[in-house]
Amino acid sequence: MTKLEPGLTGSAALVVAEEHTAPRVGSGRVHVLATPVMINLIEAAALDAVEGLLPPGHQSLGTVLNVRHIAATPVGMRVTAQVEVTAVEGRTIRFRVEAHDERELIGDGTHERVVVNVAKFDLRVQKKVKTGSDPEVAVNKAVSRTARDGSER
Image (tube, rainbow, N blue to C red; front, side, top):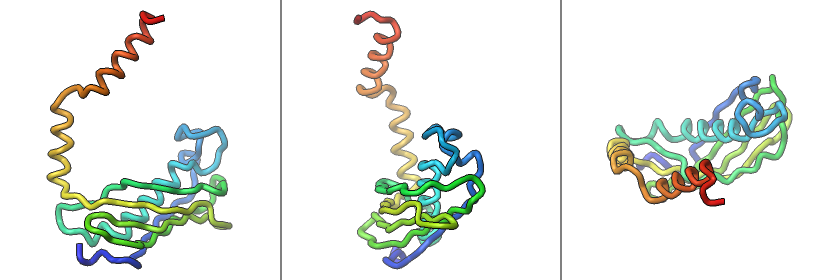
C-alpha cells in the first residue's frame, strides 16, 4: 500500500435516468437524482482513485460517509463525482468528496475506506453465516412474532 498517498484523485459519472430517481430507489417521491445513487457514485469515484494501487488479493471497503446532498438534479443531466485522498493511516484511506451536475455543486463531504485482505474478510463473513442466529437476531424475531401474533397487547 505504499503507493497510496494524499493527492490521489478519482472520478465517476452518470447521466441521470429514471432508475436513478428517488421513487425508483425508495428514497422519496420526487423524480430527481436519489441521494443513495449520488453516494454510490461517490464510492465508485473512491474506487477509481485507489483500487488499482492495492496489492493483489486486497480491496477497500467503505466504512464512513459524511455527505451533504444540497441540490437536486433532474433526469437527463450528467452528474460527476470527484474524490481526493486526504490521508492514509494504516489501512484507512480518507477522502474529500464532491458531486456536481452540469450546473452546480450538488453534494460534498468526506468518505473513509479500509483496505482488507479479501480471503480473510470472506472467512470472517462465512463464520458469521455459519454461527447461526446471534442474540440480536433472536430478539428481533421474537419481537416480530409478538407483533404479528398480537400476543403481548
